Length: 318
Image (cartoon, rainbow, N blue to C red):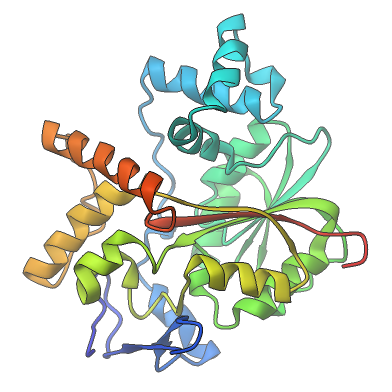
């Protein structure tokens, strides 16, 4: 495949290679470490976060999910607690709303590290939920935006080569980050070192086994050459996490992003490019039917979701 940057302005062409044994996928050629910052010259994390409008019903569901994760202060009425118990038994709803805290359970007095914190919106959210928050961001422009928007400590540097201390953090999150790192096992070993025994690690990443990749192949939204250096299938993500010393607690795939993937991939197939600044549209009845169908497909074929979600911990001996 001779693929070009379809969203921003990095010059060059790339392809992807796949291991015939484990079916892991990686970018070819991989960029040299010194060249990686050049791939993010006009990236979306260079702009301050824009607060999203939240409907009253969505705000209620988010509060309930947070209560279910142990953030008891998030409850504003008894209905929040009752709805929290209900959401646990409806996986699609739990997946949609508990990700507001990236499935990280509350830990009073805890310290949380967000790896690849971007413009800092998640740091601000978790600080409001009671965490002491720290960001790690290799892009200096994004790091400056994150500091200004969140008021948090933001360390500049790549996860593979930055000293984060040993056993400093109660929770570490990586949301759509591990696909950007050159050496995923080294990155996860750094996570394992920095995590306290019994601490929580959460990773979210595109799913190369998802239906979008199967349907759109080279026009799949999440290929994103040259920034996505590795594309994981659920078993690959589990394997590299365990090799790094983490103990996987739960791994699943989510279809929540399927509609966006479908829209962008359809445009890429037709035009070869897409402006990621134009990501808002009003869902049509057909869109809603598509979303329901995707949840049904994932219920039958559990590895079909567009996104992999992994939660892990660190044992005392790790």
